Image (cartoon, rainbow, N blue to C red; front, top):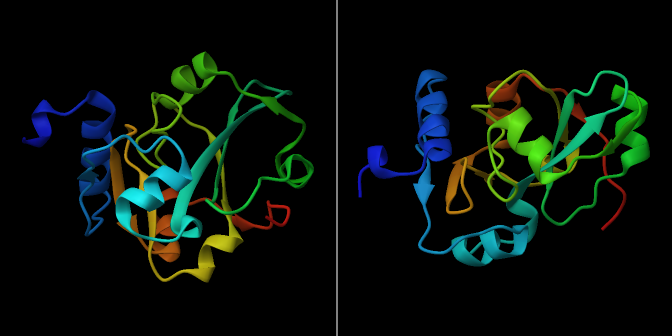
Length: 162
């Protein structure tokens, strides 16, 4: 199946990656990987290698705050708030409106509009990581340094243990 027949979010990420000169085009999985564990199982990697996207709503201006964290870590909302201002939970409609993606497929690139992004320093434990590519069946490979380059987001301490 060619890329033109894939869902719009997946195509948007493929286009963004190509425009950014990323060496690894997105890959379509035979199974949906809505969670880090499902993605790790489908790819045959450890769950920490999954760069999961967690979206929050910044209270001061309603901006989306995307935290790209290691799949085996939990985001510490207090640490994130200390960096970007007070945040709250984002519901599925907010995530879709601000990123252009549904939960389970939020990519680090190719968003519908501007947002605030942070990268979890814990991802740098791995040489290779996998991120969502705009759809629960879509993923792409990259290094943590690639993630930093592709997003322009700062690397920070944003998690609390496991």
